[in-house]
Length: 435
Image (cartoon, rainbow, N blue to C red; front, side):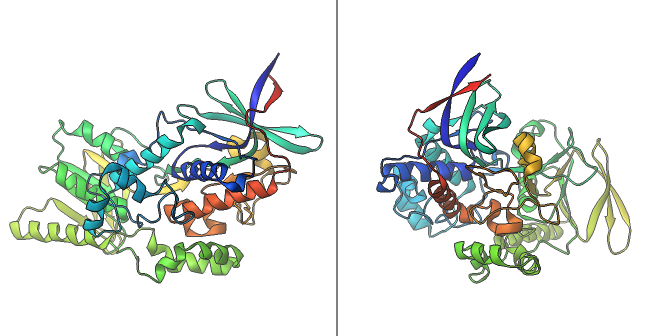
């Protein structure tokens, strides 16, 4: 039995901000003279039922940590109709935003911008559709296509793959999520269930922006509860968003990082990690300090900081043993919830690639080898390419999974696909695949 499957120049796995930005770049390319009658065909598969980006942390008061100018398009195409400014104009808030005199929108507002942009390209995405397998299609000894099989039984054939599988919540070794122990990515969903439970104590583990935001929100939402923040540092450290340090996010910095030797790469990451990792906006640090000081004055301390400390034992029932790193003294805390704000790790794309996974080459440290245009290096000869949106920090630098360079990155990926394709695929071209 045979079934017809559509062939696309690009099939995107996942539809978060990165592949959304790619879909926009494709739409603009195809609408412009650059296409020269040869549009780049694409389709994206997203397992979520609708567009969503870190919904569990869309705190009403939280702001973006990047300028609104680092939206989905502006760094690539400042005249794009998909810009954040055009979104504001459409929403009737452009003048109000200008009067606000702020480069950093609310996170919920930026998410609304993403949804607005996603709605404009929803004809190239299938929501509620999870990719379950990717299989190579050979032409002689060369891989000519990839068959992308989805959870609904459908299949797409691709000349190129763009893997935008996002990040996965990271818990420390030995810690498993449960009713009382969970990652901060679940925050808003969990908080709703706790509002009628009259919780008495929370423990928040972590020292970064998310940890500080979680501590502040729990302190606000549960005025009868104690919030205990546990971290190894002496205090929350401010994010380095100074002008010169921010050059690490510039597009040309990707070229410099990619060409550098491993010792230089390691040094740059150590030097500039504070621009993104385990760092907190200074305004939030000041606000938390005000709360701690005010409570000391009032004699009721609900926000407690266990600094230079670590949790050495956490039970499923929410009992946390906190150990001081300087004295070794231990404090046992019974918590209604233990929230780990311990970051994320990039999803490994190779298991999804099936038999191609083991044929993706790795460096001496076991990391995937990636070309400058974000293509995986494989031992199998490929007619097209497998491109990564994320998981390239070791090769391309700190902007690997950040919004700062997204618009430029997708432009580079698209240009690579255009430059490398042998014959443009007419829209609606079909292939016959044995099923």
